[in-house]
Image (cartoon, rainbow, N blue to C red; front, top):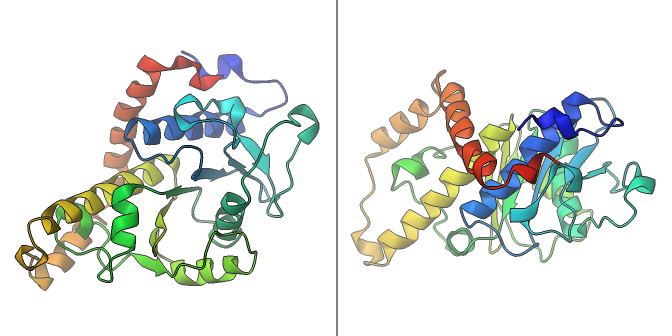
Length: 258
């Protein structure tokens, strides 16, 4: 189905492409069972100097998200073009977390935040994510942590979220809370959240046999594997995986582009 065929005349082709990819990402997160009813968020920054970004309409489940359901807001949480969709609702905690990063990490186009069983469990372990699997080693030396401060309703937490993520990391564990990743592209954000979630699942499975039995690779191998994940070919592989994953959306739910 041609994505642009259903584009409203008041939305640019470039924004509509971002909307379609973001809606597809919502559905892929649902497909891989990384949802928590309506209570998590994925956002994408729009081009331009206004620092506008798209986030979910709080009333919709991830598996039914459409390009037109995404809400355009500014860094103060104001809805843009509110007259056309006055019924849309933006979650306060989602705005706080995502606006912090979109305002300060312009290299990150897309931010994904999840509350999965595995992600919350690892976020609640003192050891954090162990460098025990190939999936986990993707993030070795490049994973940040942010201490739990309660539900993210206060604007003052934004400064600490930005500080803890730092200028270079693209993944962060929110202690006692869940997972957060950013991507320079929407496909890259999908790649990061998929592998971080799988790393957490693998850690819990290994620990179920006894924490003392978990085998960690040698530190030299940990560093070597982490470096391999930064090979020049990685973005190409990420895009191939994204294109393949989109067929799950295209085949099942073509209304995503509406």
